Image (cartoon, rainbow over all chains, first blue to last red; front, side, top):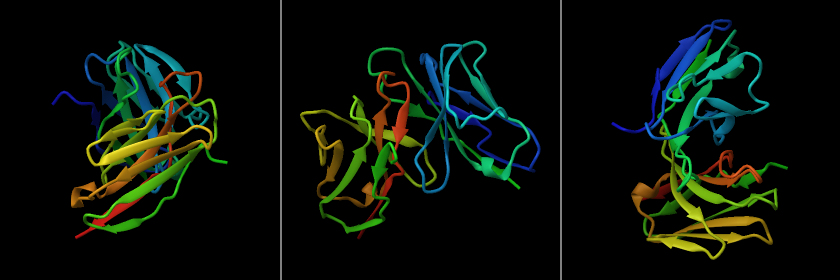
Length: 115
Length: 112
């Protein structure tokens, strides 16, 4: 399977714990995005990388959230001291640089439940 | 006002009927527009881009009205497999297509 992959697919954690999610983009894609989606809403942009550089962070991304893409390949999203309001689907997407770069290819998401 | 607004539905439509969705966007400087489709508990996937001249892909037709800041999607001869949530998507001006703003989605159910 050469699509975007995300791990884990589901995560249940207790409030206050830290969690980390991983995203593996399509191999030749330079751009990688993180979104959050809650029930009944569309995906909301969190942050974006071009290669290893994090070029933008949304105001939604509080200090408890951090994302990395150390070698310009896979990315991790960490949430520290989780809160119940963090419960959501976390989606990763990737796109190539140039060409039809407008199409973002999404992974299956990581569903986080904070109890 | 939300950046992208859609009627959330649900739209329950008999198989074979024609259905249309509308979407409005707030920033007149937005330059790129898309419809994505999201099946239940699945990831969003690009359905089609929306061009100023309007564009068609099989049973699907997308229209853009820049003056009214309005985007539409028309589905003809609807199939059971068209049941999904349709997301209206707009890029953020001056940032190319890096940041996309999604509407809340319109939920469509095709009834046999």
